[in-house]
Amino acid sequence: MRVDLFDFELPQERIALRPVSPRDAARMLVVRGGGAMEDRIVSDLPGLLRAGDMLVFNDTRVIPAQLEGLRGEARIGATLHKREGLRSWRAFIRNAKRLKDGDRIDFGANVSAIAGERGEDGGFLLTFDGEEPVEVLLERAGRMPLPPYIAGKRDTDERDLSDYQTMFAKEKGAVAAPTAALHFTPELLAALDAKSVLHETLTLHVGAGTFLPVKADDTDDHRMHSEWGRIDGATAERINAARAAGGRIIAVGTTSLRLLESAAGEDGLVRPFADDTAIFITPGYRFRVVDGLMTNFHLPKSTLFMLVSALMGREVMQAAYAHAIADGYRFYSYGDASLLLPEG
Image (cartoon, one colour):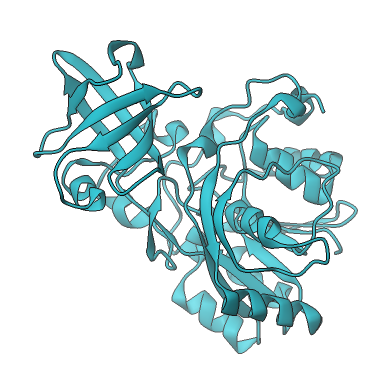
C-alpha cells in the first residue's frame, strides 16, 4: 500500500509535552467497529469492558539509554536500541560521520565503548568497556530517552524518570515506554479487578526504531526493526483460557499487540515465545488473538498508525484522528488514549 495513504496534518500544539495528573484522568476516544465514536476518560474503562475480558500489559522497563560522549574532539550522541550481547548494544548515532569501526567513545562517569562495524540502518554496534553490567553504566552516564518529538521541544528532567515509566515496569531493557500503560494507576487497576476484568503481563523491549519514519513510498518496501519479547507458558495458557471462556483480549499498547500476534498460531492460540519479532501489521492483516486495543495517538505515516488502521480500517482511523485533532486531544507518548474495539 502507498505510505501516503496514512498521512494526516497534525498541529504542533496537539503534541503533549507532559502527562496529565492523575494518569487516569487523560481523555480516551472510544472507537467501535463501523466508526462510532465516544469521548470518555481513561478512568471510565471499567464501565466499558465486560467481566472476563483480559487486558494485556507490557512490563518492560525503560533504561536511561541516551548517551552523550566524545571521540577525540568530536561530540557523539548514542541512543541504544537493541541488546546484542552481555556488553554490546546496537545504537543509533548522532554525528556518525565522525565515527568509524574501532573508535572509542568516552561517555564520562568512567563509561566508554568501542564502536563496531556500521550497520545497514546507519547505526553502530557499541561494546562497553569494563566488567560492570551495562545497565549499571547507564545509570551513571545515561539519560531517559524521551521521544524526539518531545526531546526536541524541552530538556529531559527529573520528572521524566517517573513520568516515563508505567506502573508495570519491571524487566529492564526498553528504550521507549509502552505508553498506553502510562495511563494506569493502582486505583484504576483495583476498579477493573472489581468488575472481574482480568489482566496479564508480557515483556517486549521497545526499541528506538519505533520512532523511525517510514522512508519507503510503499509499505512492501519498509523493513521493520526487530525487538525482543517473551511470553511464558503459564501466561499463554491464561490468555488462551480467557479467550476460550468468551473474554475479549484487549492489548494495552501496540507493543503488547505485536507480541501477542507474533506468539499466536493460525488457530488463534498463544504459545510460549522468547525471541525477536519484526512483525509489520498493515491493512489486510488477519488478527489471530487480539480483539481490541488501547493505545495513544500516533505519528502520521508511521507503522503504528498503519497497525491501528489494520485493526479498525483506514477510513475509520482517519476519521477518528480528525475528530481527535479538532476536539483538542493530546497526541503521542504523553498524550491521551484511544480504545479501539473492532467488533463494537
